[in-house]
Image 1 (cartoon, rainbow, N blue to C red):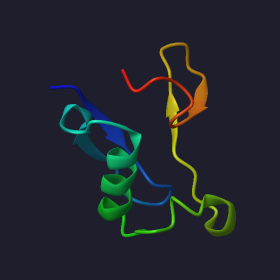
Image 2 (cartoon, rainbow, N blue to C red):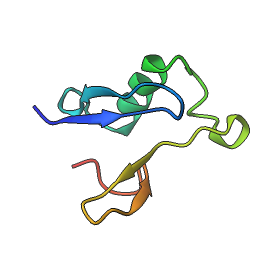
Image 3 (cartoon, helix red, strand yellow):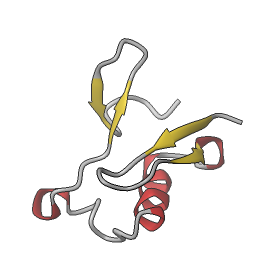
Length: 69
């Protein structure tokens, strides 16, 4: 299964199996639950949280900018 490391600034990193999710919405919900910020990822403009990922070239992109596959 494809595990990735996720972290929240100031919190210990954790691994998550992204293969169990069918899309970005489910992944966002799981991350929010994991880090105790339920409801705050959907309102990132007002709460200050943003989900980013680093691609193979080292660039940081917003989660959801590319296709789920």
